[in-house]
Image 1 (cartoon, one colour):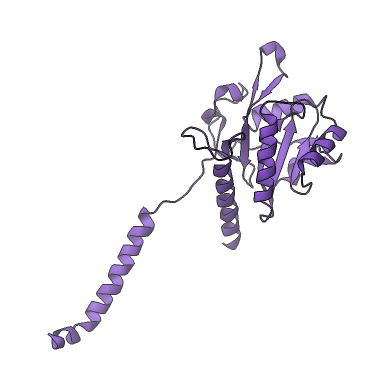
Image 2 (cartoon, rainbow, N blue to C red):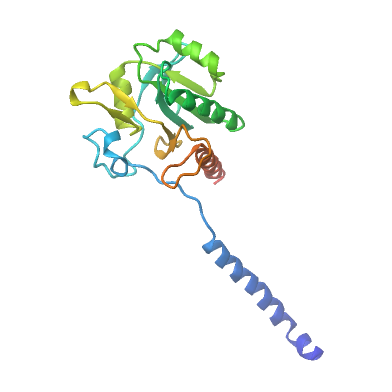
Length: 237
């Protein structure tokens, strides 16, 4: 028996190594691979999308449009400040007493979670710019502990905010047609990748409660981490 194994030892060694290689290939092919969709207007609730783009389905076409607003420090913030950055956008107003305080607290939580991920930013748009002036936003930012290098609270022309909400972020409802610029903001936090594409929607009022239909803040953090690593891997290649 010993002579038999000795005679075919190289065969058994190669057979063993080959078997391990095949098992690894099967494992690699079958293991779970995380991915995130690239959202288009046709994939989102029509109530949140401008009627002119509701049926747009080209994933390479839909990106956040150019914008220009003013932040809590009186600085002009444009889309160029976010090019090449992963960021989370939302809509709020400082006098809101319902979902906004919760969303604000959860954004503060998120700000702390991404502090070691340079290149990840936050962007909150006021839906009542007539009330949320620069000084008002600054006071709100100080109260919340906003890191100016990471998180911009912006105000501007209401028509411009409405446009980007409905045509870019696909995240804001409106009232009657006669109330075209009366925005009803949602609890949505919107994840945008480094190319300006929408990659996810999350309940900004839900920190960790599991819901089969809606992703929560923990899900958002995991998706940010995945996108962040994905971008780092692209750079390495």
